[in-house]
Amino acid sequence: MIPPGPGEAPMTVYRSPSAFDIFDVAEVNHIGHYLQEVLDRQYLLADRSIANFIFQFAHTSHSAKSAMCLLSALHMNCMKKLSPTSDIHETSTEDMNLFYGRTKKALTEKVQFEQYDEGDAMASLHVVSSFLFTGGRGPWPFFLTIAMNWVEAKLRDPRYTHLEDILYRASESESFIIRTTMWFDVWASITQIRQPRFLNVYRQLFGNPRSYVVEADQGMNSPDILGGPSYLSMVPIVGCTNESFRAMAEIANLASWKETENEQSRLSIPTLVQRGLQIEEMYLPRLRPTVQEPTNEMEFRRKVVSDVFRASARVYLHTVLSKGYPSCPEIEDGVAETIECLKLVPPQEGMTTRAVVRSVVFSICICGCLTDRPDQQQFLLQRLESLGEEANVFGNCAEVKKLMQKVWAMREERKGMALCWKEIMQEGGSDILLLV
Image (cartoon, rainbow, N blue to C red; front, side):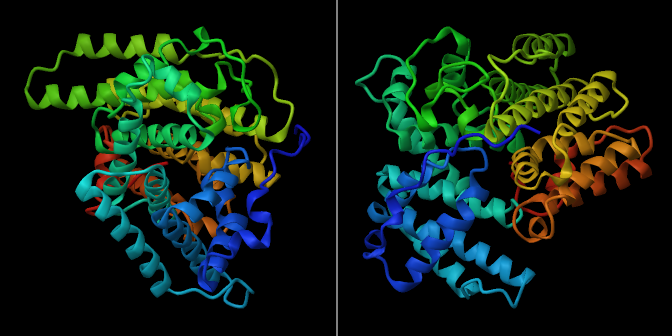
């Protein structure tokens, strides 16, 4: 394994006790717990410098402060279930309901007038995370829409003629919110089988990421080892290269187009295949060269995650082209490549394993649903189980395990039939499962 590199940007803003003076006792406990215990679980591959502006939102935004407390209360509650005798600050379901109610009320008031600010967008992303932390189901689309509305208004800033100029000149917090919202947009579009809301934006920004040249800042905007200017890169946020991100957006759009054409009884298979193979050729190369080898643990995690996304995107693409047949050669190949990438991280690596596995829940899920090989099924289950007991009560890994096992059982009953993993996923309840 690569030895840990230099420490990342320190979290300095909340170190001073006076920074907490404006909060009441409950808020101090919950915000402190969020910064120390939850933030790293929420944004596993982002630089620690994001804590500074996230904490500032607690001072400037009522909705963001309440949403931070909500995430903290959720985590406290889950940890108490695992270890009732621990010294974790006592919280309750009433606390969670209180903070959720405060956040939703504050945001709903803004919805009526469509006057969202940056703090509201951050609060909305926090609430989406709260649903992910409790299994991935719930009314998350309402909150994601608020964040997307703020991003859309930001991207329409009349002062700039090019989208890349907006991201280049955005503050660190604005850039983070924009890219994180884009990330959720694509995964929501996969889940909901719809065109990504910002597809045209992705086509403009990520059509040829390496064509842009910029002098990068430090911290979250430092150059990433996977190519492309940092202010346009998804890597420092979620570990996914722009090419793989663009591929996922295009595949989601293709899946939506296929469903619409099917409903209209006019689907052209040659057109479907042509479009799909074009996506693969342009954005999903088998071997993706890097600018340099990773030199520290965070870079290593991002490199593994990026390779897993690239390989599993090919699996996703070929389920759209060839349905859910595990014996399809392209699907078999993509599943095998994804597993080889995951094997680069030994399960005993602790923090690195947790960061990688939690970051690629979708990849594990789709590959698990698209393999009939017992050894591959067992490996993917073990990867999820390597996260420990906490993953069973905090996050959506338990839902993913149940989904994969349900698909395996149904395929055993319906030998030779293709199974749509997304349809089976939605059978789990009226709420759509968000796989992030």
